[in-house]
Image 1 (spheres, one colour):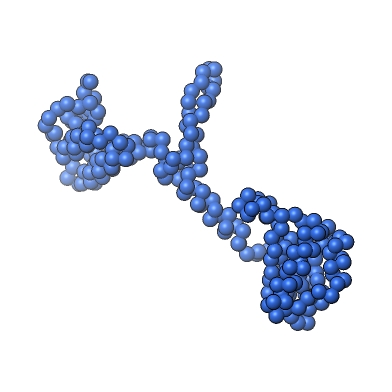
Image 2: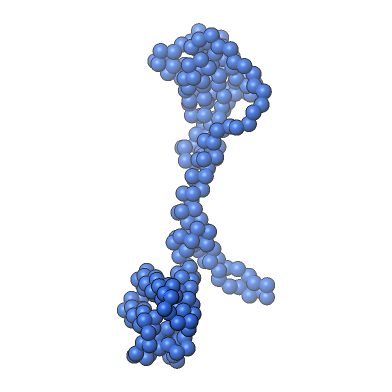
Length: 246
């Protein structure tokens, strides 16, 4: 192979076969070439690239370094830094190593087909995405608007019930798509039951289970119950249950 290297240097570049390095940077490039010959795996070669990058940075920052050597050191440092991200093991968004990539076939403007690499979300991005969702879900409400005052005269005097939609998490929760949440407005004690369907029969059954659990926790059936006018609460089964003495 022909020698291709930085002008005046013997090892600073690929395919060099000289024996005598001219300075410290050329000596580091020589060791880098020898290390590449011994190690063929990408992980080990990246370590060698990092060592050469750091040595080149130190030479560039040294005030006693000549202008020509500084130019070569600056180019070497940036080249080694760029080589790491040319490998198909980095996510373009977070610059972290990832194995989540797959080749795809793309048709170019001239009608030819070429193979491109599609980077999927790596582990770091997935974790960050989950953290952002958690922050949004648990972020307190800051909006100010007129609210109806709640007047309650004691524990179990007034309960509030509502249904929470959890459809986006059904696959993770064994098919449970809803949550029936009930709060005692005086003690702020709360109960919750998971539901797969939000029809009147299932909601009524879950509400009865909440009442049974509440009795085990020294609570009684509520005197009043506040809900919205959705069909899960306004139906025959729920109305019959509310008239019973549970």
